[in-house]
Length: 389
Image (tube, rainbow, N blue to C red; front, side, top):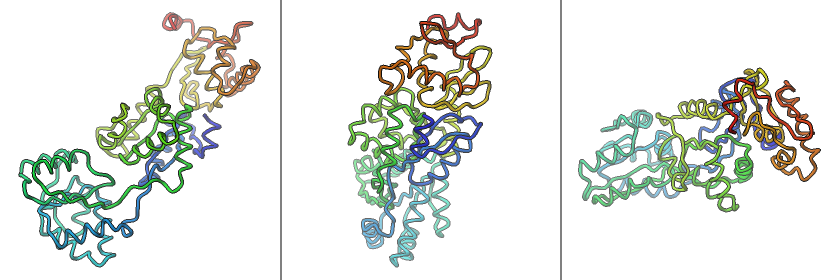
């Protein structure tokens, strides 16, 4: 994976850190630099492929129309869902000469804030929210609205990129008139190349985790995989080896709809998302006692007694084949089949094996068994544990 990462534009891996030796794909368009920096600081190689782009607010005619409608026809309730969206809405209204009118209207209605960040944006605009849930959950906002009773009431909801699943439907079923305020809109990226490279790397085993910070980004990646005929391979990768990490349950919905089991932090923030990966990825790495050393097999590198040793893609393929049954002899023919695109020449195994041993820095970790193949030099005390494969 090491060479593939360089070709795909991944950043080099620091020598240490809980994510050293792992490659993480970042699909975010917004705050991608912040997420990437958090991952790199912990040692990860990062492949950034924004799966969408955000239409500038001032260019969005739908937002202008919704803003004028709300100013002219007051809603009973306005629900603000994101800080960046609320700030952008006010800034866009200012640009259209409607800023004061919008703030006056919002100051005269029941204003609900989904969480502390959007509450701060509301107060910075000189307004005061009537209520905000401690859980930052739209489900709790919905529960409050339904408890109050919404029949015959007009509820405006600041959307955050896509319709909120179930939220709008529940309000309409309870008799509300719902007005969506599309504060910013997700669109496919102008350059699809990075997304395609990330998909290729993921299905080829070159990525250890994919991060998602919005439902539209997850949906966009799945749609692109389907367009290219790669959806079955992507879903298989996410089910076997690649960790799909979502910042929260709403983000995970498009993946869950495809049967993908995701991991999510308890707090829906970037920091906890990265901390979760710091536990998940090392926890899934294979650690073996080999020839008196402790060897931990990571995505594109191996920790040998705590020292990070980057390994070329062919070498990682061989090492994984050997580690499936540590201590057992694996034939050259089987190892050749494990090498991607190696053809039929078993000499390719010998060449890749020589490079693998050199990369590991301890040649005795892998033993040559004359006329039979190769084996990991499993410590004798561990033989019983792995004797059944």
